[in-house]
Length: 84
Image (tube, rainbow, N blue to C red):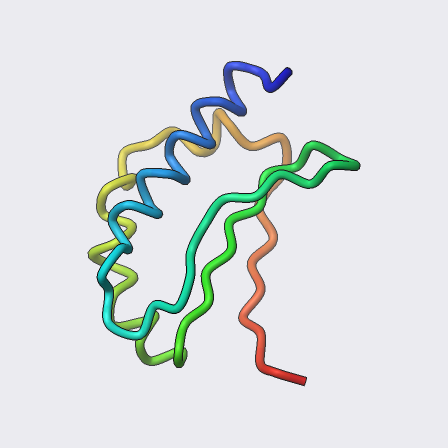
């Protein structure tokens, strides 16, 4: 069962998902949980990095005051991927 901290982090991730809906260039966004580690993963697919950058400030404004430093067990890993 997820901890209260994990539940609050997941709720924050869902707020980001909601804020991103309808953003130009967004293909898919969502929160995922790794079955092996129980780690939460936020994944967003965009048509381009430019589309993400154009929307990111507005999307993340909705969680700007969330206490991530209290929720994370370790700093998040951030990946900006290109098709291989």
